[in-house]
Length: 297
Image (cartoon, rainbow, N blue to C red):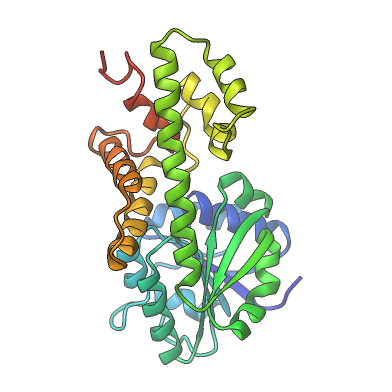
């Protein structure tokens, strides 16, 4: 196994399962941390390691720190320039940042980390919980080439496909595009199946026809049956879809582009959140398009 201790910050669905995967492979943990201490305590017990209540203690405990937090605000907070922060005593450390946050924040974090004498790499994930647990993630990486090479042995333990995209921020740009298109496909599929249902068509038949025609998509494979059966156990939440659609739209506006499909899709996922459905899987967007669901006539 690769030498050196590791730590994890952010123990949601993805972070916890990546940690479990590395633990299975014999990685030595310094500590784990989450903004909800109960999550950190529980996972630490499961992995047989310790949990930290302070970010500075996480940095002191390990040479390589994975971060998998929720959004820009959380990312900036854990790498704060004052107060309790991962930057305290960070010299020589390697931070592998896997959260879907805006490119701007990845650039900011890289600058702060380098000023602290450490190294930062973005490793954006284009997979879900099952892949995190199995170590079969698809990772898009951005940062300095030499930092990518230093991180590669660890990244290869949690992924089956690695793609070095370019400098810091560029992997986050590509990830934003991936999720923008995925979310548009998800919203479109929900409308297609919702209309098919209203027409009285057999949805299993419609999905099979879709799979053999230009309506085929990865989302059809992952979400189509779930939309039909109203099975929305969360792998990628509607709330995260709304957030990620917003990242892409912000990039488009910076470039003076009008993306009406992305705008409409963001509005639908925002509606999911507004109606209390945001913690359902993204397939739950079908609850907004099928008649007779979620109060729809």
